Image 1 (cartoon, rainbow, N blue to C red):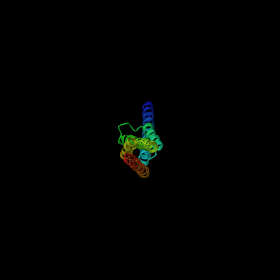
Image 2 (image 1 turned 45 degrees about the horizontal axis):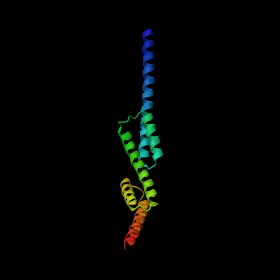
Image 3 (image 1 turned 60 degrees about the horizontal axis):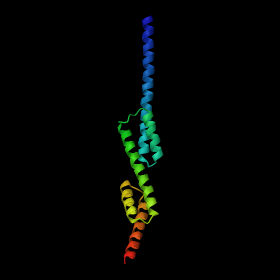
Image 4 (image 1 turned 60 degrees about the vertical axis):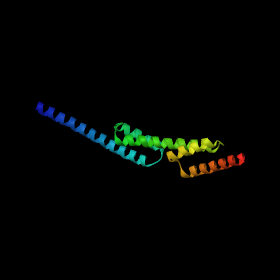
Length: 134
């Protein structure tokens, strides 16, 4: 009878562990889906939250989805930074700085309308410089 109780206790403990393991796996899957959705978007804060949630759910730093999410985050941050620098350069009269900002922004995938505005501004600066040389 004591042996039967011990077996039953071990079986119950195993069942609790299995249920917990299933909950953890479901949480990982849910976090992975949320991260995949965030990767499709361009919202940095949503992506950061999804990455944090995925890591808290137990997805390791070497998992493909985490790696992909971090790479996408870097890309979005670079785009945001390039956009800010381009907007700053738009307000100045420095042709070289504007050209460099346009090149950087183009590589980072900045908004095409902003790039077009910057190219038009560069053309104006170049025209003004050419007129002054005459």
